[in-house]
Length: 461
Image (cartoon, rainbow, N blue to C red; front, side):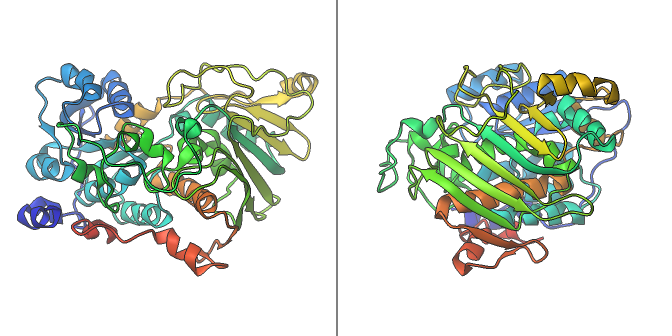
């Protein structure tokens, strides 16, 4: 069906044409089309609308009319609605300046590739895509269309966390970092499931509002089950990226950028409790090793997720309090747990404790923090939140802080981590050639399965 539709509608075939964005005047608003309007998509739309810098001109969702889409439809009752993003572009392309993609990880890629090819600015949730190769192609498309503004939705990259980390690196406070512990030990959706699973869940009747065929996009066909949709997709290797993909970009984003980490040369699974071939382990510990970079020493990141898979805590760590800068997980309310999401950064002389998203770092123990207080630089305030930053960049007034050139390598780190989780194998990676050198099977998985018929066009730049 999709292949015939693609050939019937001219707009479907424009993904790789060179189109240029419309010049938006300083007093004009950005015409924004929103793809994914329920759950996280709703929060994104509300945040963009709150800036006062955008006109919401189109709403698109594969489950348009479902209960979780009602709030946004009531907010914008007169805005045109679509279930297929390709039909939206074909019918309204000339009226759209930019798009938001608040959809499952595996859906980011075709939407983004088509939008960039049509000269539309793109705000896409984190991580950028599900496979290493998809992220690579998204970066190449952005480079080919330099007038198109891109932004990945790791919102802390425009808050205190970003400006403090940048200032402290530039002032020499954060230097000679050798180890980072990153942790996300809150309950996850799959923690109540049976890891001895031997098949995907059985087919169930589909909601009448859902276009299941489009929901799957380029992925291999699955029959509908409620445990695949509305956030549950995060649980499955075929669709999501687990706790690492969900929270890694909110915990490691600034360290990755300002310590110039790039891609690791080795990723090793140290612990995979409850490992199976279908959904993410109950607990995971991963090691990411990065080489010396200029005058910066080699660095290892250890990632911990799982309820009882807590990392070692240094002396003087203090209390792991609930930080108001950290929003709740997609499972609901952020409740106190043994250790709240965050990181511990070890350098030659100092140790830093940090949270997630916009949370700022503190030096530990407290005595050392007091000693360093007079040496700390003044941290500038953010001129714009992540959503306003994107819209102002669309208008040519700012540069985005998490463009694909910065967010892409970060996302690829998580793609490599997921491969290690899925296969249980250590990855040896050539950072220059961007290939896995110790396993042809693993290297083939960088690309992932070939797309379904009718979705191949998006895999060309």
